[in-house]
Image (cartoon, rainbow, N blue to C red; front, side):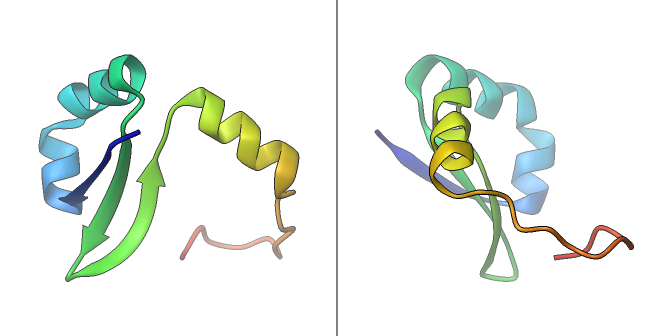
Amino acid sequence: MAKLTVTASEFIVSFKRLANAVLEQRQRVVITRHGQRLGAFVCVEDLDFLEQHKPEVRRKAGPLLC
């Protein structure tokens, strides 16, 4: 499975192409800003695996900030 790293700006501009790569080629897309990893865009199968093996951490209510 391939991993592709893009900046947040590239992610926004290329969302459709990246979504197709995730769907069709099962690529994992790592999104960065200023050289730091922000998050990832993965296929549903990867998400299902994460949800099954790593339960979501409960957070206090508030703004959605990383």
